[in-house]
Image (tube, rainbow, N blue to C red; front, side):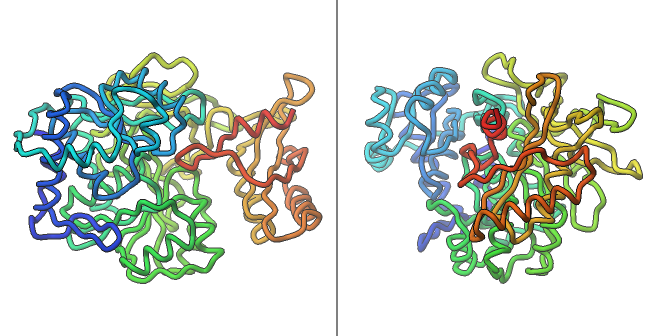
Length: 477
């Protein structure tokens, strides 16, 4: 078996991918992927080698990724905007034998292993061989992804072929996805969330996946939805909020998924009120690839997704009982490419525990996300769930700020934690935003109130759009 064969098993005549005006059916995608595999082998790569893939989303990206799988070469999907110094470090960490890059990035890297896009196209055009798919076992390494780096240096995460075998189960069983549907994600394919839930899932179902090389904003996403009318839509909470605020209308969308960061229940309700489409909030990590928890607007807490088993480990008891969750799922990664010491996330016995903490739902059925371990803090001797405080402030400042977040940081006394509220003003004058923030803070219990308010132009984010909370915490000093 080979995971590429699963991705290419759709009806040969059905459209597999759409990019702008270009459509390619499963037969065409299979042919393009095999030519890509032949070009890789002609370039001297061999099964077991790794190759960086840093191109914009599109049919070319898809054929290269699947072609690598077909040839037994492990693709490493990364952001095409990755800085040269970070790219060089990533290639050193992964031991990549080659890197498929845009022309300018290849020149900037100055590494003989780099293959620029123009040269790649020429190699694919010249390739005439039709190599058989490299055979692999379920647990054999298939591809690598890198974490977003929210907790430090990005981590290389090695995934097995079996991860792709089951990537469609969430969409099929919880979103009702079928082969006749079109998938579209606003997030890019170097991010595990859209890679698994839109690209892998759509192709595993034999459905159609809409790809966009451009970067998303509400206007771009609205245009894509209007043009291609996807049935299954994926995005992240920050963009969902911007879509709601912009009044973007969605027609034809049957189901919508959210992941990548915490989704406030109020946001899910607002989305459903605007579109009539329930927003299914998923939780997963690059290490799990697939989403392992889900919650609909009608659910009081998150429950395990199909194929997921949870093994809870209690961390604290008493006033605010918290748990670490160990997840078992066929898509859990094989492990990291190097020893990781800067994070509380860990693998053991085929399970994975992220560096996040959870609380049991009041009725004991399901789980509530409580943020990373450093987001559950004691303030004035009382436990504070920073995620809950942030969501409360967001709700109270709706329409008064473009975005807000709450950050715990050390006070003058190293043993004391203080909360800080950061806000992006948006269209309102700063004094009005400050007044709204102060009113929101005063509505909270005293021990939950942020001590300082910071107005900023933007929030620092990772390549996948996740907030770099550590950078904001450092700015409070």
